[in-house]
Length: 567
Ligand code: TNX
Image 1 (cartoon, rainbow, N blue to C red):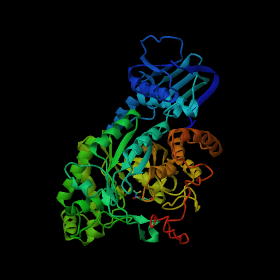
Image 2: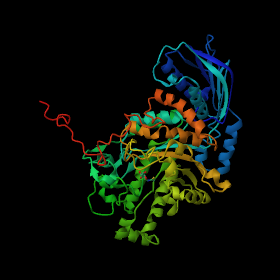
Image 3: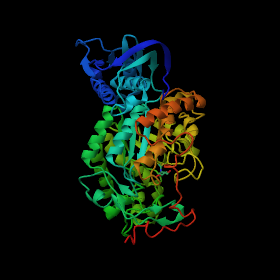
């Protein structure tokens, strides 16, 4: 099973599942039961009814019983915990205790008990891993008469409350259907956060009613680098797309049903060239800018005028309306200050504010937008750079630069910020799996699945009393070099399986054991239709062809093959 449960004892016989299997659930577990029943029906073609605990089950078919929101025990403990820490989001966000479950498979049937519906859902995800991989399909792979389960008893709870996947939909746009699939895959692995990097220099991907040009202009770029950016070539091909509010409502609802919180990121005040291209008055120069066609960091950042702060606040208000979760990410990474230093307006603003210089403006700016986030009752997340400029109280810090990981985590925790660990050398799944020419083009080498599995979210040397500040960890897929869903799946899987175990299971790591379980697990990934990377390396269809990059020998394409002179 992946991720490994806290305690599991095999033994005895389990029930035999057949046509007519019944899912029995209390009120709080009804949604989870309906989802499980629908999955079982689709995979087997059986009739699988869903009933309440007081309703009589007819016939002698197997019974799967789901009970959520059980009073007492762990949920009471976490309520006390919420009072003690007194933070809005501890109450609003599932604590690891609440997400636990007990799963018993015996001759009497399957029993899942949990302090919350989320816990019951994770119990059902474990149950699916006890069934044949073909049970993960959306249509019967063959005629299923019966499936006999072995007995097992599991007690399980996650190590961390924050178990995330981040996807950059700015550098390349990914269609809504892919996000829905990714949510299924994340939640199947008991991950509970999808962080969407919705805006960047290279594209704005969220509809904002008050500023329509953000998507009319900001969502489209003329061309992109071809091959590796260091090759210095362009592809001449326009790219773009964006999510309407209706798309995002669908994504958020799909996520909620699977207990995933979608965290929107609007990166500011750097990484904003797409917005400046749409509304030039947001920029520092009179220069007309287009949506950035390079990768890397644009020098063009937001100006620090009142109108720009108002723009950011209004955008955040619309975005927060779309995402009901308790967090909003305002980026804050990699903001060059060259334009501010050269700008009379920015220097004047810094003077008025009594700042040492324009470099200090980011801290002031972050405090301005933090007011809007706090007024909406949400918690602000920023990349670790917001620390340097003085992060607003209560902000959650996402640590990404490995060389600073411990320092930033300690600094954040000591100043009572909570921390999400996302350090590059273990969690940047835009890096290749191996330094091997067969790997698809990637930003750089290399994070093997083994390396991703070795990640420890609590930085070595962190004082024990500060460990509670580490909310958890997430992997990131930046998409400068990833333009299709298939390629994204390849980059995530199986490394995301490793991240799932790192964030859900205990501190102990046993690579040979994990690798053995992963080999079995690839059958599940296959049934789920995931373009995962086999442990041995890319299949010929996945491997890099080298035909389209400058590093390969020049290839003469026959004129006919290029679609010319066919007659
Ligand atoms: C750094 S992580 C970035 C991203 C890039 C990524 C490429 C972070 C906060 N900024 O903008 O896409 O590296 O690996």
